Image (tube, rainbow, N blue to C red; front, side):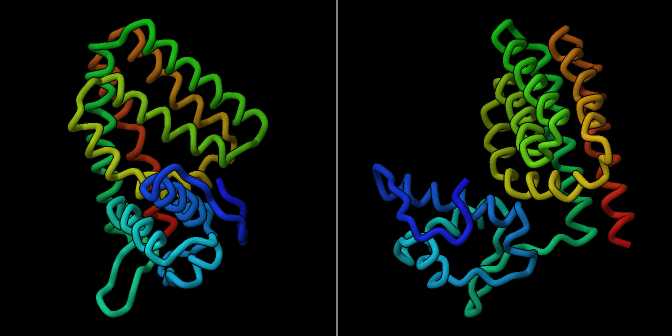
Length: 224
């Protein structure tokens, strides 16, 4: 992730890779809370910050618009999305549906390579939890579910999940505060890993289905 307030140029082999790199940096800044919900993202200021053209910033913002993290308002500009109770319900329900289906399909297709990938991710999550690295744990949480969907082999499911990436990451960041002990997050994932790795598709579906629902309820309650 790029450091805050950096003026160092970001290199890339092509304009596309530079735009994607700037998009990644802006996403991280939003998810880290540096740009609060509802804040206007001014192209000139961002171009100065990252030492790139306004065209590059404009293209990077389009990535985040596609992910649902940034909203473009005609004649007003780009704004970080705000998260209302209705948004939490919708993001939670859609995430739950996609991840549950992915878990079921992954359990049916799991092989040694997939088992190794999930076990490595779970171990990395344990390390992050034990060392109190909550930001890393949140990142790994998303990587875990994306890997499950990759193992499922369902290309269109992966495409839809990728489009929800920004909003899912924001959801994970907002719900992180409900886990006073980060090891509780590991306890949620271990049974899911066991179900997928053992090929128990129905158990994997049910475990993934319950995974997001409780977080959503707590987040909505806190918003009241």
